[in-house]
Amino acid sequence: MRRFFLTSVVLLTLPALTGRAQNIQITLGPDEIGENQTWTITVTVQNDRLKNFDNFPEIAGFRKRGQSTSSQTNIVNGQVSSSQSVIMTYAPLKQGVVVVPPFKMTVNDQVLSSPGKRVKVGPPVQQQRDPFRSFFERDDFMGNPPTEFIDIKEDAFFALTTNKDEVYVGEGFNTTLAFYVAESNQAPLYWYQISKQVSEIVKKIKPQNCWEENFSIENIEGTRVELNGKGYTQYKIYQATYFPLNTEPIHFPSVPLEMIKYKVAKNPSFFGQNRQEDFKTFYSKPKTVIVKELPPHPLRDLVAVGDYHLDEKINAGNLQTGKSVSYEFNIYGEGNISGINKPAAESNSYFDFYEPNVRQTISRNGSRITGSKSFTYFIIPKEPGNYNLGDYFRWVFFNPAKKSYDTLIAQTTVQVEGESLKNEAIESVDGGSFYDKINTADNSLKNAAEPDWIRWVLNAFILVIMAGSAYLVLRK
Image (cartoon, helix red, strand yellow):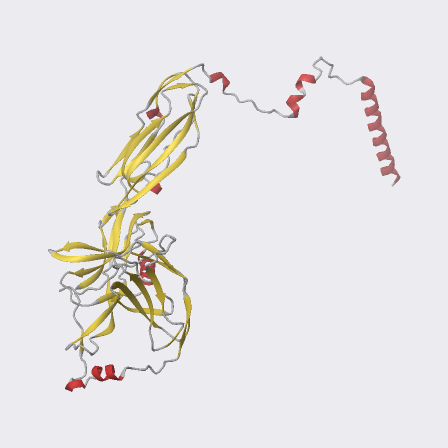
């Protein structure tokens, strides 16, 4: 019988919803406990079955110790009432004040809110025990020897896998971190601070020379897979597609994942303790992905890599010179959608092309990144005639499946009617104040020669200066 105990875990903040069902409630533990005591969060469903619920929150200063359930049925004056509860037990890490922040949980598809609280963790306390229960839990009760716990060998492993071992620059490869548990596993295992661990693991494995498309796993859920003819349950904790930006190899180091693993009593008894908490660390194997350079091409450093197709739209069939028209060049397919650049379209004597509006959608499904990126241009035709937009809109990319370059060429043809705007290419601009005075300036002819009396005056002035200078020199 399979005894692997893993519950769904929320890694990211769930959407904030409102509302609380009247027959479901969250109960928090006491305001004060001793360092050797435990604290609990209890979810109770009245007069209904506990069908589903989210994970319990991770609390800084507390460590999850385990999850249990209970049920109760009461019959009073013929009226039957029942309740089912799930309890998460927390153990304090040290003395002090632990702040339990407000949190939300979805139980039976309804969202419940808890305001949180402050819990004071004091020194260890002498716990009062039930003498009757203590008597039955003694190891020497009825001559029983001390409980011996054994470590059951787990049939599970932690692995980082990629769907490709070798890629081109810009070609995406999917990376998955997952915990695998065989269907024959008998060892009891629980998650331990999984959100914190995943955050630290991602920092270690994320390559610096890649564009990342994260699949944003929010809930860890089991999926049955078959490996080498053996059945396993796969629990994905992280998944992303990476697009290398250069030819450096992608090295993923070995990373650890710590799990709570219980030892079980060799001779379990009805009254005694039948399991003992322990920890087990699993390690992934290192992995390297080789990155190849693209084949020679004039645009090798600029092209996108993937499997792409073209979809076009234009809002008019017959165009008029001087009137704008909207044309959409939509690229869709599989690859790094964010890295798709606009097709180069330059204005000329026949058309004016304006900067496009850009819209993109990205879908992450399975291990594929698909989507579309559309470029909507506003075009103003300037000359009448028939034109093929393929002469202006072309987009080159590299297809790794075919190992060759390909080009998306516009197939739309348009007919332009109206008068030629060729002679209106010179724009009307303000020439400034100099040109503004042209119309008011006197344009009559005048003699540019200077009058004789001005020349005599200048010559006399020069002679006086020279004579004065000579007198000063001789006198000295």
